Length: 110
Image (cartoon, rainbow, N blue to C red):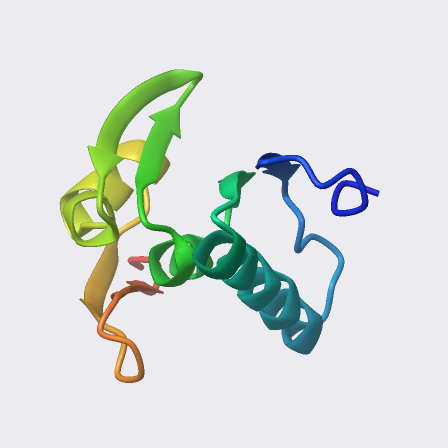
């Protein structure tokens, strides 16, 4: 329905929730195509940091409703910020396919 209205701006809240990985990628690629080819502005809430890092031009990292960091994925998706915001020890490495940051959660400490 959102696409049928042909609005210049799309606001999407967790558009990949409950989709299998193939359909998640399809939705995100469609959004990228709409942005690049039709100039649509797309604001999207994603809780999957790897998807956000791979597909977003700009990332806003929030904690308890407050903005903690904004910028490109490589500026925002860092080990320090992921640990600060989510309390998750992790490694952030370059995605071997895209070069975007890729979050790998560390195993829990014993």
